[in-house]
Amino acid sequence: MRSISAIVVSFQTGPVLARALDALRLQDGIEEIILVDNGNPEGAIDNAIGHKKIGAPIRVISGQGNVGFAAGCNLGANLARSDLLLFVNPDAILPPGAARRLVEDSDDLERPWVIGAKLVDPDGGEQQGSRRTTLTPWRAFVEATQLWRLAPQHPYFRRFNLHGDPCPDDIIATPVVSGACFCLPKEDYIAIGGMDERYFLHVEDVDFCLRFADAGGAVYFDPNVSVLHFKSSSDVDPIWVDRRKTASTILYFRTHFSKPYPPLFLRLVELSLWGRFFLRSAFIGLGRIFFARPAAHQRVVASALKRSGE
Image (cartoon, rainbow, N blue to C red; front, side, top):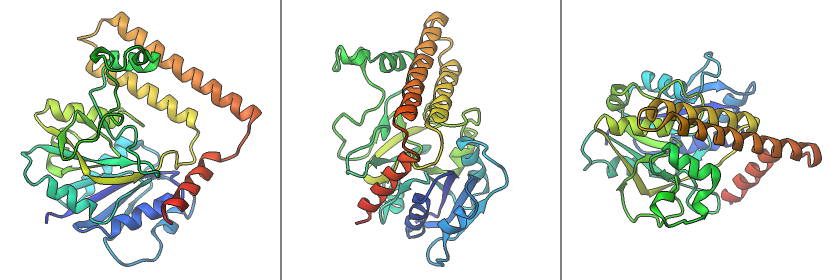
């Protein structure tokens, strides 16, 4: 089996990081784990790594500050020693044999390929974002305005996330897989320049899959590998995260769709995205005023971790 370098980018991740690293250390085929520390509380990385000597060694890359997820992935990829790269979110828990299965399932694929795992919630259901169709300005407008509710089955109102569709029985070509867990040869990752570092947080995986396909590659979704993925595990303001996501989405549209779409429509899409952001921010702000719950999301994640470990 070809050797794998696992790359984890962590920023204020929380206690789930230790469990994610433990799961990676026990994976067959993983020769090293590169942990890119974009910023965590003092002692958090040491506590997450612990003193265990079993499994793959962990290399910590720190001192660069919070350079963003895309730049962190590139930093780890450039330092990787193996011919395969496995990118794993710090809040994603791989089951035993997951890394080996992803690689084995890619053996018959023609290069260049990238293969992504199925993401599941703590309740076992497929998670939103696990597999997606191509993100276009029209599709974003349908999502932002909820036009899809008018005719959910109409192709013009096709949704971005596909987790609501029946899950395929085996590997299938899919326009977009999640950056939370995907694998590909290092040579192919480097060949297209890795992640676009203009994306600080979110949408970098969507952009990567589109550029990968445009370069002649194929993107695959592997339902045979289910990865437990916790959301909101980091102690980061959700308003800040949503602002970054909105800005990244607009950058993606300007980069890939400025020519095929009329400027006026792109401006309308941008306004709808910012409008949705401000409405969400106002809702969160009001909730903090009237229903203040310090670190509530962390408690939810901690509870889910406990349940999933039972």
